[in-house]
Amino acid sequence: AHITFSMVFVTTIVHSRLSEADVAVEEAAMDLGSRPWQVMKDVTLPIISPAILSGWLLAFTISLDDVVITSFTTGPGNTTLPLLIWSKVKLGVTPDINALATITVSVVGVGVIIAGFLMNAAERRKERDAQLAYQSNL
Image 1 (tube, rainbow, N blue to C red):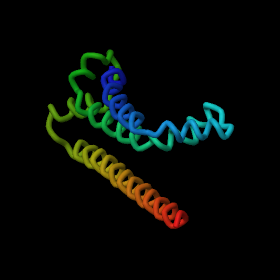
Image 2: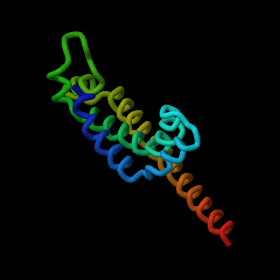
Image 3: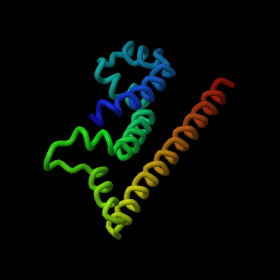
Image 4: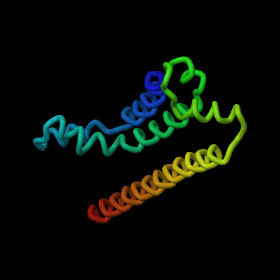
């Protein structure tokens, strides 16, 4: 149920990135002899990887928030993280819930920081390549 519910968000983000992607790059790779799977691995996936990462982060965050959907779709004996947190919070906040919340916020924060660094590095690389291309044309 979480996958079905979260797929909408991930699909929207990845679709918007794919619509902005330049098809000429993939066509050039195929003209140079790459097979379709190789084009997907070497060209398309690096282009859409930031969108996949942001879609995963959004789906993870939304999945933690949807306790109601989880409670309706889990069977007996299955306890997911949101249900565990909800059941423990109903009894009172304990130090293990505080530790779990700290870990969750830290993991998401580190993921966002890493994504920021990767996006900045890609932008700097793109600007450097554009400068080199401009200088080589002079």
